[in-house]
Image (tube, rainbow, N blue to C red):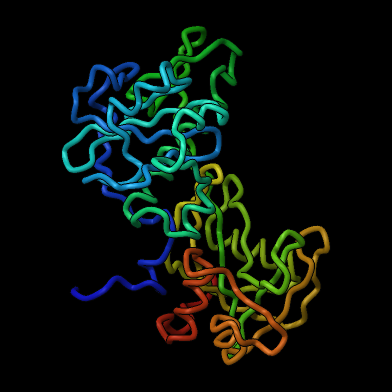
Length: 319
């Protein structure tokens, strides 16, 4: 496929692309940037922000050289992510206040939501930074064994922690979230949470619970939040969401009822919207000033693919 990247479809999704080749098996214990050679690079998190170089180098904006990394001294956590174009890439964490070690105008510290909204780095770097942020956040929360309470040690390059007390191995977790475009005829069901910016409506979403299929999670969350019954469900697309480590599983669901009864603890409002209304919400000229999430979010992709006819007919009967 040639031509310019699609800035409204899957190519617009934040954190969903990466040049990283994962090789955690290359390290049996704790990794060290200082011993990895001059070609090594570092993704550095200062609190919730990533340190970005103002002028991108050959490999990108977020990959610091060993010389640049030296100014931080010892990092709280350092893990081996894998390789980018053959170079070993590490991730490290320092306190948020230490971002001052990388002053403007040569550097800046940016949180990941702003990074995606601004398009501050190329798309492939967003995925790399998301991996770094999610893994570092997991390590910060798992310094002690949940089974016996003893300290755990980092191993496998940072893709595992081990407990010397009981021998239990701990692995980084990803939290699956079902996000769904619920449709009925020529209308779709959208809701707004109390934390949404004014006028924005989005697809319903919720965490998948233990022992639950993706399809059943879609049905349960839709019923709990809006009272709408859902039949067939089909997977459409996914998006990593590093806040701190979720995976959004985008689905299309067929509603088999129409009357909405919102749960006020979950939603401020929920409504059926026609295809024509969604077109105007995406365009930003809805008569009520209503909008949808930006193109960087999977909810936007689900809505745009629906109005563009890229979502097929209803799947078969519910299991």
